[in-house]
Image 1 (spheres, helix red, strand yellow):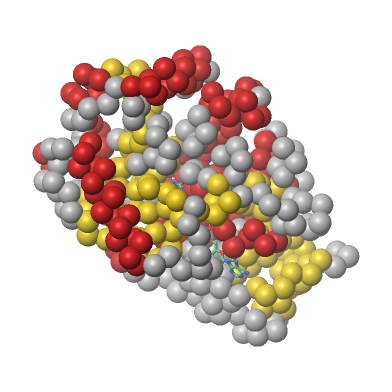
Image 2 (tube, rainbow, N blue to C red; image 1 turned 90 degrees about the vertical axis):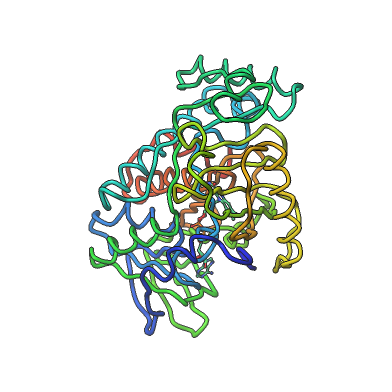
Length: 400
Ligand SMILES: Cc1cc2nc3c(=O)[nH]c(=O)nc-3n(C[C@H](O)[C@H](O)[C@H](O)COP(=O)(O)OP(=O)(O)OC[C@H]3O[C@@H](n4cnc5c(N)ncnc54)[C@H](O)[C@@H]3O)c2cc1C
C-alpha cells in the first residue's frame, strides 16, 4: 500500500533528519510499537520514563508514512460537526471528544516547547466558513452549541470575513483554539528523545506476523527475526486495518499542495487555518510564513498507487477553487502530493484494545484530526499499560 505519492513538502524541506538501522538480531522488550509515525512516536514518548523497555519498529524510515504527507492542521473541530456527532455518541461524549481534541492541541504545544523552545509550533485561530448561503443556518446551530459548551468561538458575518480574510463567504465560525506544526519533524524529535532514554528504534523492519502467546506476543520480521514483547502497541496507520477482524474505516485519497512564496501583503487574519462546510472541503493555511498550503478534493479513489496524472488534475482543481475564493492572491503550486486517508463512521478514531488480540493496544487516529487523535491515544494507551484508570478509555473504543 502506498501511503502517499509525489512530493510531500515536509520530506523535501526537512530531508533525512535522523536515520536508524534495521533490526539485526532477535530481541526481547517490554513494549513493542509497530509504526514510527507521529502515533508511534507520541506513544513511545509518553511511556519513555516509566521503567519499561520500548522497541519501535517501522518498515520504512520514521515519519515516512502518512506523517510525511500530513498537512498538519491541528483542530479540535473534527470532520463531524458537534451537532451531528451528538447524534452518533450522545451530547456528553461528543462535547468530551471535542474538548479532548482541544486539550490535545495544547498538550502538543507543551511537548514541542519542551523539545525545543523554538520548535516550529504555532497556535492559530481556525476559520470554518459556510460554503453556501444554505449552510449558514446549520453553521449557526453549530456555533451556538459550541458556545454553550464553553468553546472560544465568534460568529462572523460576510462583511467581517471580507474585512479580516479578504474573501466572500456568507458566514463563519472563528475558533480561537487551533494550531499547526511540522509532524514529520516532531516525529523525529520525539524519537530522538526516546532513543536517548535507552530505548530502541529500528527502520526498514517489516513485521510480517504477530502471534499472541500465553503471556507474550511474538512479532516476526521479513527476515525471520523475532521480537518478544509483553505488550504491543499497533500504530501502523492505515496499514493497521488488516490486524482488526472487522471493518472500521474506509480508505480514501486526499490531495494537497504547497504554493510558491507569496508577498506578505497577501497574508490574512493571524495566519488562521481556514476550511469550509462543503463536502469534500477545501482547506488552507500559511506555511513557512510565506507559502500557502492548500488541501482537499478528497475522493474515494483507492489503489496501491495514485497515478501522477490524477495528482496533476487535483492540483489544478485545488488551485482553481482557491483562486475563485481568494481572487486577490496569485497562487502557483510548487509541490503537490496525494495521500491515503481513512474515514470512520462518526469521525472519531479507534484507540484501545480488541478481544482477539490480548495485551495489544491500537493507536489509530483515523479521520481529519489524526495528529490530535494520536496525542490522545498516547495518553489513553499509556494509562492502560500502566494499569491507571483513564476516564476517556471508552470514548474511542472499538465497541462504541
Ligand atoms: C495529505 C494528508 C493530509 C492530512 N492532513 C491532516 C491534518 O491537517 N491534520 C491532522 O491532524 N491529520 C492530517 N492527516 C492525517 C495524519 O497525517 C495521520 O493521521 C497521521 O500522520 C497518522 O500517523 P500514524 O503514525 O498513525 O501513521 P503513519 O505516519 O502512516 O505511520 C505508521 C507507520 O507504521 C509503519 N508500519 C505499518 N505497518 C507496519 C508493519 N507491519 N511493520 C513495520 N512497520 C509498519 C509504516 O511504515 C508507517 O511509517 C493528513 C493525512 C494526509 C495523507
